[in-house]
Length: 113
Length: 110
Image 1 (tube, rainbow over the protein chains, first blue to last red):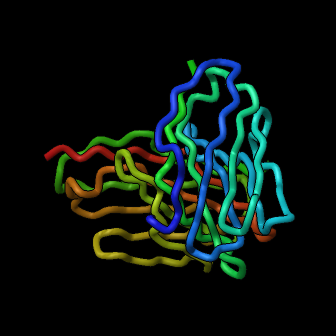
Image 2 (tube, rainbow over the protein chains, first blue to last red; image 1 turned 90 degrees about the horizontal axis):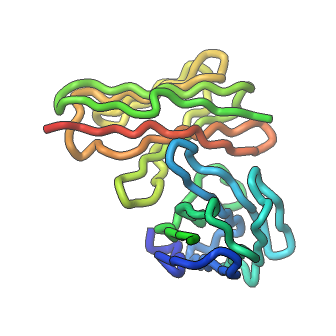
């Protein structure tokens, strides 16, 4: 969905480096999410934010941090990347009042060597 | 914590055959959703089921929500090559927590 964009789309980095993945949306949604996808494990929730001042940990937040710079922007950081953080990362948005339906960005494929 | 299990993990079918994926929750759900992810793409919302025993159809796709609201299924009749991808269920509890199943990867051989 072009209304949700993620940068970069692909990134290769080395162990120990700090990495930031960015998500922007023009849908006007207040709720934003970061998921990680690994083969056979589906989508696991890392962090979510219901508005700029509300940040919550998901199922697998260890090793990650987030920043909600504005309603339209939600960034995910890996402070010190490790190889088992190699995965496909998706940002998603949802609208207040209908919080269930997730609108996903195109994904960022991250490889940590 | 809440768990949503989806089976099978993989399914290979010949074009024209039917396909079914099943989703089971460890807790009673408020709603259940289904998403499709094409190869190389991102998950896209297909449908949401809310009522116990609900059945909804989208062309060749039939979605069911169990009477106890703890399980669901997606059935595709006469698969086509355009059906390839990963199908995810996502269970939503009464307090709004959404948990995805592991997904079923569907391959359709022409």
